[in-house]
Image 1 (cartoon, rainbow, N blue to C red):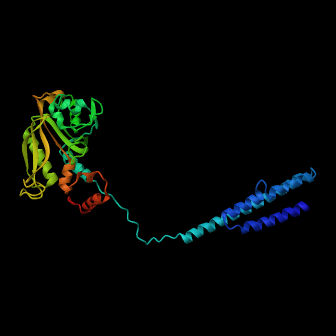
Image 2 (cartoon, rainbow, N blue to C red):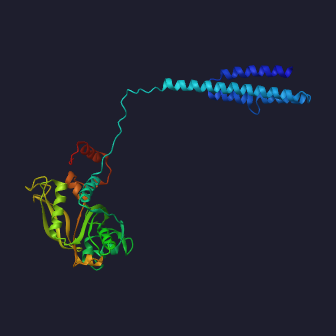
Image 3 (cartoon, helix red, strand yellow):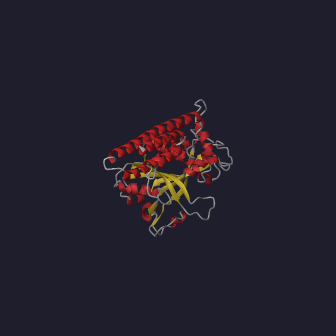
Length: 354
């Protein structure tokens, strides 16, 4: 009888404590107090030693029944507290769906990316392939396969970053052309453009960057003439700078083309009248080009009596600076949001000017 009384009182006190627990931590404390290893229910088992063997089974069942009853009450109280917490959250954390959403700041294409993609789109439409290559290149493909042997004085024009005597950071994307010609096993036609980063020391000129971008084009087939080159460059100039642009070709020298020409475009700002952009000449120099040198074709396995070709190279950095009126090349590489935001405005307007 003493044990039954004690169990009854223990159960009543446990129910009071459970109902008075107003949060999860308080309820956990009640659980430990009554059901823990050193809790009150476990303490009832100390009376087992005072019972006869016949009484022990019945007493053990009573203790287990009490433990289960308290566990059920605790579980019920846990559910009540969880529901109260959810209701409090729903009450205190209301969302006003009528409020305007936060505006997400969107970026804009970098002016170099815009310029490169514009040029790529033009030449893809003309049936050219886009070919990329290695930035760390072999001396053979960077110079020798382009008619620039080790003793050639024209190497001084390209102050290079050498890694070993035979490897360097490429100074132009022309090695991509040399490798592509070699892979074609002397069979044309070849129509490719090669965009990518190039590297030159240029330590004597503070206005030049050690890294810049280049796009070179190459066409090799039967019966390619200088007129094909001129027509292609006219189309390129008008695509980039306006439909009324004209070009002029001036004799120049490049080891891998013969004859070679510098290409000027009529000034898009003053329409040839003379201004600060064209330095009062009416013309702006934009790229170099020429007919592929027979030595370059022969070294790549092409019959120079059967095949001819033209090549050109331009700097998207310079084109973008002219096209968008950018005065300092360093703006391209500083990631200044104020600079880049101007091109978001250009995209929004659908225009091609800042």
